[in-house]
Length: 369
Image (cartoon, rainbow, N blue to C red; front, top):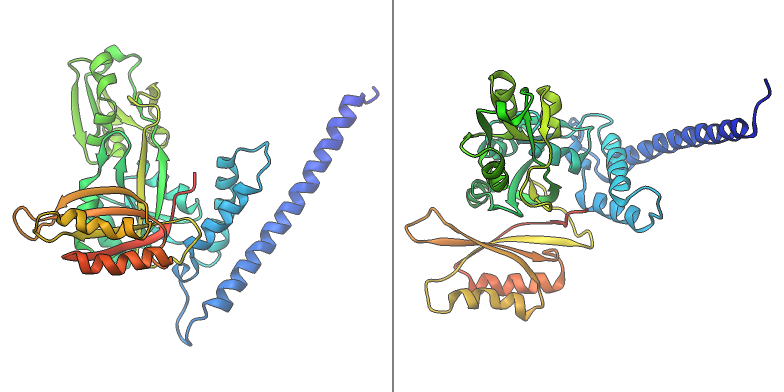
């Protein structure tokens, strides 16, 4: 039986794909060799000391590479896919000797873990912590190189525990991740009629409040430490369901009874990366500040004036009790730019004069996609 023209064309396409795959593999290995050489050349260790992955990890450089990849992307792959592929290549190159250790709010299967993988790739070692406080502790104690914690949600606002820990910890913010949150109702029952209680983190319950009231009125809602913990309970209890994501469904072998039940289709959580490093400028950065105003009329206006005076754009302001005294508050402020940028540096000098207390929590690359 003779080969048709379509078969010959298909064979030729496959041959070209095989050739490209071979070239890609060689180029990726060459990139890994060069990345290792850069680390050994630029960050040599004193005699008797071994290097760590944290010595080589440069978030500002990764941000530059990812933005360049997006800028030159002409398709057909989407920008998000290009970023994900390059992130995994960089992650694999960085972990040649030992992977980064990154702590997150566990257990396995939480959105925090998904944020870790989006920011660092899959060639890292993820360390599940039972609470946000423990994530900070693991990084401060050197158990983890970095930590990833939620700081705000587009639907429900600020995660107060993270802000409170930033007040009391010496750690810095060295990155941010924005994760589109898709909440699913997971269970082992066949229909909504079989659901007797719903477990989830309190933030997720709030993000699905309207859906729950409409579709599961009167069903008990139980807040737990994490969505993954909710999935574990749903897998063990008859009549229980959980609100969680795809990863939790896979890990705990639950069916997605109803997908995407979040009340807002643009539901997004912003996470911050905490560590002991201070990234350099990447070209598109944010700086997070912790400020305290003097107790006087017009103090807040005076506090924020240096930002306007030096043309620094403020993207967020949030007040929290300082925990230093009754009715004493601090302000969390995010601005565009890096602390080393001339206008930001000038604003910071004036802020230190105007504020009762001023601390830079970190300058870091703005989230990419």
